Length: 301
Image 1 (cartoon, rainbow, N blue to C red):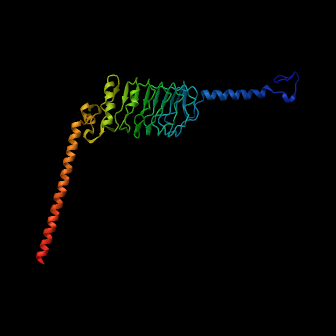
Image 2 (image 1 turned 30 degrees about the vertical axis):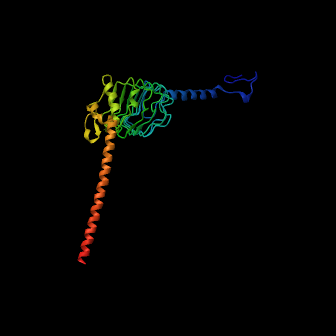
Image 3 (image 1 turned 90 degrees about the vertical axis):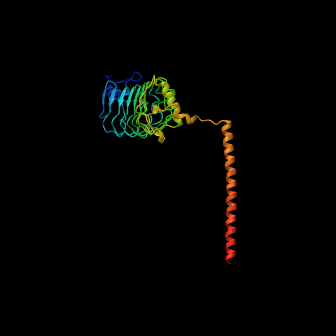
């Protein structure tokens, strides 16, 4: 039997003879495809030592294929508007994701479900409008999240950062936030730095729980207190957030006693009697004027 053929049943049959010269190109192609999946670099991007840099390329969409062992991915300074659902599913080694200075309005649900090693996430300078519940679900090793300079960011869900006990740095500065639920922060036991300045805070009664929590954490948590100012109500417009004291929220805790209710009831009764008396006097006055006018008419006749 000639070299490069496979003999079946001890005999050489021409229909069942497979030249090794034919098999080898398919094996080589398979190896090349597998290798490219692991080490291939997206067009225009630069890849080196598990770092993929696709920043500043004016991309309108994310590159479709990345090396599977990518640990640091930069898509900063592009024009990306959306991220496909499941985009990060295959990149389980990802540690750093830089998406700053794009045009993102929202992130797909479950984007970080396989990002268990992700530690640094930069979403600053985008157009995000809200942070939904469990947005960072399963990314429980996150240490740094930057959501600053999202001017349309008006809502952070109370459970947006649930489970992120490793989070040390959170930047929510220069957005459109007027209110932030205490529930969104109180579970962040490892928080060291919190940036909230540059937002149009409404310093009403709903702000008191957050301020009280921040004051208790101020020794352990650095905050940009000088930049955080009240936008409303008018009487405290421009006042630093931390200049507000418990006295500022005194009106929020006013309670009425039984004497207060009795006094209000008495005042209401007096006002009612006065209203009835006033209407009675006005009725008599109107009746007298009518009779006097009629009497004058009769005399003239």
